[in-house]
Image (cartoon, rainbow, N blue to C red; front, side, top):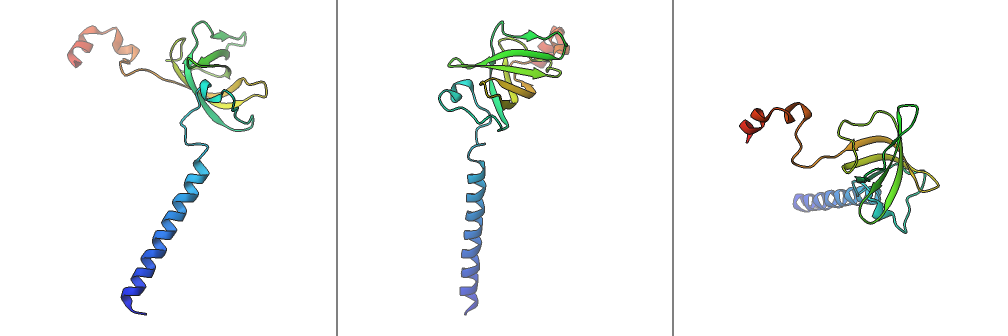
Length: 143
């Protein structure tokens, strides 16, 4: 076999190997492609209870209830379509509050509620750290 044909065969095999690896990676990630599930995404197609997922949306106004132990909270995540009750035990992020964005990592309970292991608070593009929000002269000089 000529050297030209050998290079062509090697290039074809390399291309097949790369495409095969990409196909395997995509098939393994097909259920994890969404960064998080919104409550509306779960209507009619619940996630298995043993699967670790992320649930994202807005913390419903008036839904945060702190338990007597001081570290457990209950709240409701909404997206305008549906709601999901969430239970979390641990320290909440500083930006976690009602009517703000949140991504909860954890698992669904058999009753449809969500048991979070971790909370990530989201903020909008106009966020300013609390240390700077009181200093108007610093804010104006940054603009």
